[in-house]
Amino acid sequence: MESVMLDTLDQRMLHALQIDGRVPFSRIAAVLDVSDRTVARRFGRLRAAGALRVSAVPHSHLAADTQWLVRLRVHPRAATGVARALAARHDTAWVTELSGGTEIVCLFRVPGNGAAPLAMLSAHPGIVEVTAQRLLRHLMDHRWRGRMSALTEQQLAGIHPPDTATPDPVRLTDLDRRLFRTLSTDGRTAYADLARQVDWSESAVRRRLTELRGAGMLLFDVEVEPALFGFSAQCLLWLSVTPSRLNTVAASLATDTETAYLGATTGRHNLLAVTLSRDAGTLYSYLSERIGALPGVEQVETAPITAYTKRFAPATGEPSELTGAVRGPGDENVASRRVKR
Image (tube, rainbow, N blue to C red; front, side):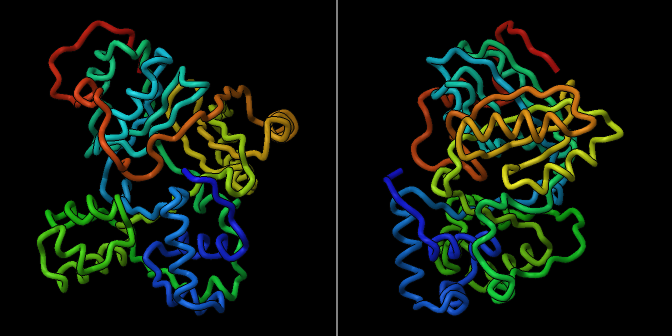
């Protein structure tokens, strides 16, 4: 990513895109009282610098997927290759390197009640240990406040995200899957370009995309490096919380500016958190003074996030040369490795 800095207008534009990933530049311009050209130029500058990416994926809960949080202990020399290979897979939603490249954590989305593809992971020579826990529930109903506080209430009202219907499971069609592949790369792809890439009529694409959005089936995200907002210490936390206090602890942490994500999982640690702090000192204070003081928190394990290989949608660029070694559940060359559930 090129060196960039965000000013107030950039932050307001990014906040608007977080509300509605496909909101027209003209609407953002009207809300911010600037020209359409200014918004388009700002957007293009950040995207060209690699500082901004708008993507969209199907809502896993509505698609009736099972999500598995998989933690890998790896040889540092193999970490980047394994992470890129995992990012190239269509069933991974999030891939990150931890602790200087000695660990990788990723999220698998498996149709129905399927299991995580652990056999093919344990076969990789660079992977020392594999653990997997099911992600039971997302415990935050909002995104990280650090990038969602630039607009006023009046400005937010002018963005108008589409209303959603009752969140019932949606049966995906072949057209949907084609749309998802394209939108995961660029969530703002124009209708005409979408129609050409999925080989359907533009009217059918418009109609189906409207239906998917109206049903809450399509999730948009704006990927921006938190360091651009002044938060350089990113950390993954595994918390062991007394079950009767799990909801209370989660609700409390969800109000913190530092909290970017919360999820309930199976396993010894039943709460996963992603936190963002301005530096190591403020991270220490947050752990010792804030989390350490919460009733019900029995144990906390922390791991600094070294790099994101895949945040929300499939990674762009060429797949790693190790993709074939981490290719999927059909791999029959399964070596003997230590695998925990």
